[in-house]
Length: 297
Image 1 (tube, one colour):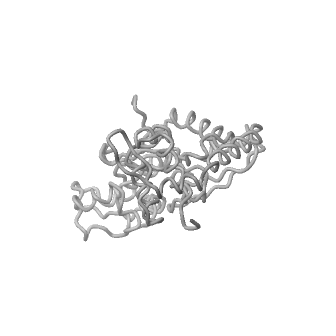
Image 2 (cartoon, rainbow, N blue to C red; image 1 turned 30 degrees about the vertical axis):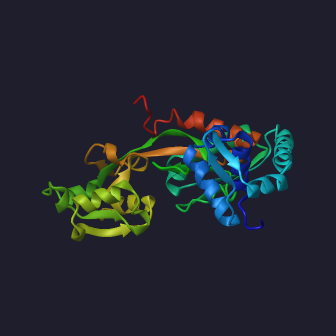
């Protein structure tokens, strides 16, 4: 049992207590496939079949009954502890660990974090600002602000808007290359392998010859600096590039390159007062920010 993920046991208890995967999914606020995946993970770790599929739902096997008996009272104790800790947290004090990208930290979040601190001085924020996201499941962070079009199923959160990407060049570069008219004739600044998951990387592969890429960079901030200094043109986040006086946007943002921005946390933390205060505050600020594109736009 030492190697069992305790979160998997929560899924097991939800299904055993409600008799079906759909009812457990609704209770846990996750989708059907997440419950099935977590049950399969638990059965694999325990090397035991815990449920029989029957016409009216899921029925515990003998091994499942034994596990439920061993866990009897555990969920109640956990809920009691959470209620107790939440009660202590009503004054909005303690620490919030936040993970986000360096791009969002520089271009979007910092003014709002400063405002939140002014309103809640008893809450200490620990911020990890890089492109390697910490794990919310392992509690390496409490809240993530992530640019992603595919968020993990085991997290809860809200979408606040979309980031746009467009092609930019410095004014000096355009003066030196005034006769160039086709994308494939420019020198290009591109994302390197670390950012190959971005939609812009696919666009580059499909539209720009490899020999026209003169430099590759492992961060969007680094790409911005390279384009600003005239090394070549590049696909940059409008969030960053539109504030640069020396840059010129060469085309309108492409819809297929838009990326959603999410505020995410672990389900077990969504009721903690300081976490809720922070995520609600940030959501209300970001959903009206002119740095993001919103559904009504």
